[in-house]
Length: 275
Image 1: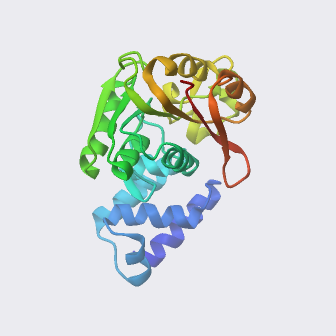
Image 2: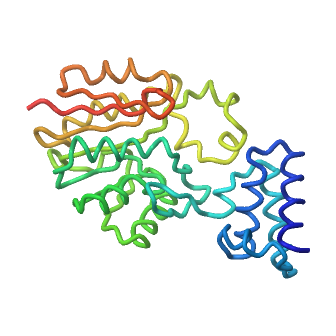
């Protein structure tokens, strides 16, 4: 079985299984099975697969056909130009969340102390620490997710203190210049409408906020004035349809800013604490 034949067979299986981007997925899974980058596949289409490589590739294809996200199979996801390790204990970092980094760097570029509340894989905390050099902390309610976040920070050379707690309950008053968060914001009632890759595989604690989807926003906005230093910033990723509610929570804050994503959907909201 050559690389070229394996890719064609994998692509056909994925197409028949209605898996998105079947060719790219086949390339990623085959490269993972062989322990090589995708560019190697293009340069060596005639290379014959070893038996173990073929067995791994077949298993990965089977897992993907069952709905398991590719990132959970390869244990990798790129975020802001860096490769993060991901497991089923953490939400897969999305490209849209990079807008949180962009806005945070613009509005709070001089922040000396940064907190990522509900860090998951640690993508936001690790990225901001490496981009700014600030003292950085990350909180996470899941001990398993906190372990992933700490390992990502260590592997990428970021100095991030990871604390297992619910949002900011373990963070001292007036201790942070910047708080960022991509909180759970999906209402429980919308569970069945999610893609099966999300609904059946990603951790529910990182997806669902409660009945309305606003519950975590309410708590973050209520506690941020306690944690932020005067002039500190709060930067939040917005879920679909959450803009009006979150804007209302930040009434009385200063320099309110709303950033759309590439599709024009409001994706990030930022505001400075009064005082």
